[in-house]
Amino acid sequence: MRFPAGVASDADSEAVAAAAAGSRTAFATLYRRHAARVHGAVLRLCGYDPIQAEDVTQEAFLAAWRSLPSFRGDSAFATWLYRIAVNQALATLRAQAVAVAGGCVDEEVPFEPASCPAERSELERAVASLPPRARSVLVLHDVEGWTHDDIARSLGITAGACKAHLHRARAMLRARLE
Amino acid sequence: MNDDSMSSDLALQQALRQLARDEPPRRTLWPRIARSLPPRRSSWPLAGALVPALAASVLVVCGLGLLLPMALAQASAVPGAATLREAMLQLDGAQARLAAAQRLQPHAAYLTELRVHYSLQRAALERLLQGS
Image 1: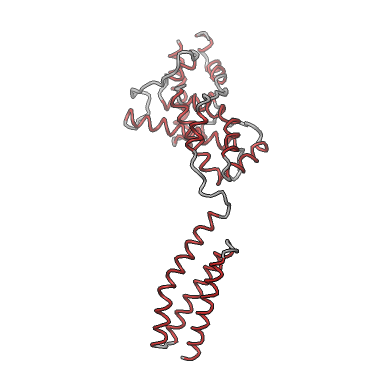
Image 2: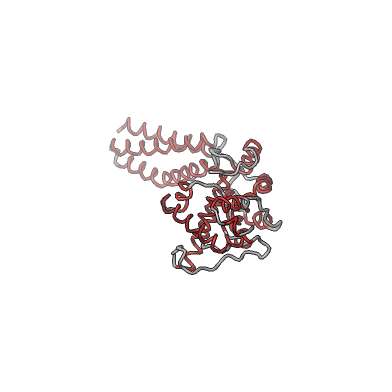
């Protein structure tokens, strides 16, 4: 999995310890270092919808703030934060699917495409137009560089199902680009 | 990006990989987050363990405040050895909890006073037990 290396964990450790002890200034430092990377991943998963991406990014940083006292440093802070943000985005997309299609996230079910700004590239708008499940798998695999096993764990599906979703997502993307 | 280049998976994946870039949020996001940050329960590292221990010790003290006079009254009215030993066991349990709380807050004067108070009561019970 190509998790973000981000800023070296040594550089973060002091700010992480201070933020865990309650320092908002230290947490602001961590935000400045990592917000662009986290927001980038969330924005792609949310189909370039800027409003939803900011809401998810906000929730991710709030979740990180709440969980920081229990952060043990088993992974780099950047990786830990990135996972929180991706999980938050996936949970939001799932909730959206439940609201729109009664929990079904299959490609055949009609869905409301993300409100992708017009200034985005043709490829970005095509990605944004994919159904949530297809977009999640495509973005995590082809953009973020996750393995099928990691994606399958995060989405609660099998690796085989993940490959099938990816195959279908690429076909849909190609069709939209033709 | 032309259609031909998109016709192969490889070209598509290469194009998609180019999308993996940082995207700074608007400047207004941090103030929103900062306003929503809940305060830490306490910035004192021991607080998480201390609060339950102190709460437990307060409950023990309140319980003993009610039970001990009854036990002593019962012991003086009917000086049975079993009753006295039961009261002493309760006192020993309370003392152990107070000791645990005091390890977390060694400078708490009220914990010291309580331990001394219950030590005196235990001594009184011992005297009763010896006389029974």
